[in-house]
Length: 97
Image (cartoon, rainbow, N blue to C red):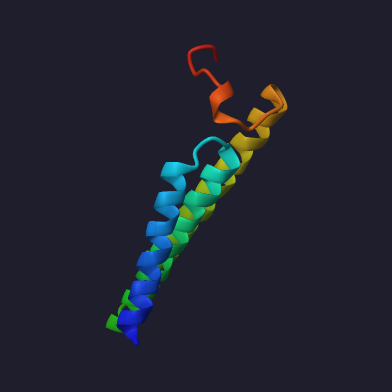
């Protein structure tokens, strides 16, 4: 049963990685893919910590970092959409900022 759950966590991480690699034209899609990767890693870390019977502090720290990354990403998305009125990655040139 544990191997099946580990396989599910790996499928979540790999599908998020493929989604991030192949669909990078919109900022929102990229942020959702990164959150899916983080969710899969969180699932695997929680499963590993629960299986080994160890402390869950590392998992809690990872969850805090994942939430902080999501908040920063959403704030950047709001800032970019208000200044450029689009979330398309093709329209941004980092040299002009």
